[in-house]
Image 1: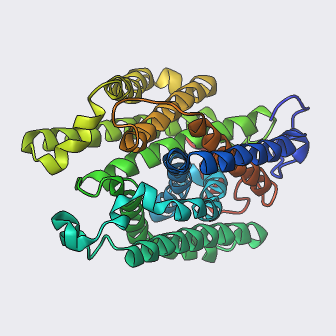
Image 2 (image 1 turned 135 degrees about the horizontal axis):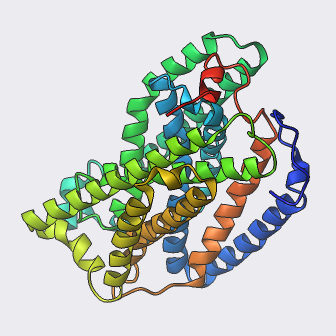
Length: 398
C-alpha cells in the first residue's frame, strides 16, 4: 500500500486506489499456490498433510489473536485501543475463512492424527483416552470451535459497525456482555484446538501447559500483525491525526509483555517436564533436541525471546513505527519457526527437511487471507467513528 498520493487527514474510508493491482495479484498468487498445493497433495499426500497443518495453524493463531484482543478491549473497557479496534475486528473476522481452509485437513486427518487408524482395544494408552480421542467427538469439537469463532467475531464486528451510524452506547454495552459470555469459550476452544490439532499429532504425549503456550504465541503474533497493518495504513495517509506514537508505545509494551510471557510459559513447560522425567512427556523435547532439530530449537529460543526482549526494553524503539515494524516482522518469523518445530518433527523424525510444500501452503493460505482482509478494509470505516471513548483514545498519553 504505497506509491499513491496520501489520503486527506481524517479520511476514514479505505480507498482501493492504494491497493491498485495488488488485490488481483494476491488472488492470482493464491490460485497458483493452491494449484501447486493440490499437485503436492496428489504426489506426496503425507508431506502435504503436515505442511498444510503447519501453515494453517500459523495463520489460525494470528486470526485468533484478532478475536482475543477484541475480547480484552471490551472486557476491560479499554480506551487506548478504540482507534485500532476495527483492525482487530477485521483480523478476527478472518476466522470465517479459516473454517473453510480447514476443510483440506478433513481429507488427510488419518495421516496426521494416527490415533484415528488404531483400534483402542489394541492400544492401552489410546484405550484410556478413547473417551476424548474418538472420531465422532473430534469432528464435533472442530465444528463447535469454528461455529463459536464465526459467531463471536462477526457479532462483535457487526455491533461495532452499527455504532458508527448513531453512536448509541447500547452497542458498547452489548459487546461487553457478548465478551463476558465469550471469554470462557475462547479459552476452552483455543486450548482444545491446540490439543486436538497439535498435541494430537502424537497421542502418547501430553502437557498440561500446552494451551497456555499456544495462547502466548497467539496474542504476541497478532499484536505484531496489528502493528504492521496500522503502519501500512498510516503510510498511505490514514490514521495521521488519530493514531500517535503513544499508541505505538502501548502496542510495543504489549509485544514486550507477551514476549516475556511466551518465554515464561515455554521455560516452565520445559522445566517441569525435564524435572518429572516421565517418558510420556519427555518424548516431545527429546525429538526436538536431536539432530538438526536442535539447531532450530536453539535458534527459536534465542530469536523468540532474547533478541526481542533486549531490543524492546527501551521506550526509544517502541515509539518508532519503523523499528517496531522490524521487530514485528522478526517476531512473526520466530512464531513461524515455532509452529514449524511443533508440527514437522512428527513427520521428519530424523532431522529438518524443508520441503517446497511448506512454502507453497504458506503462500496459498497467506495470500487468500490477505485478499479477504483487503476486501474487509473497504467494507467499513477504518476506526470506530462514534465510539463514546474515541476522543480519549485519540488523546492517549502513556
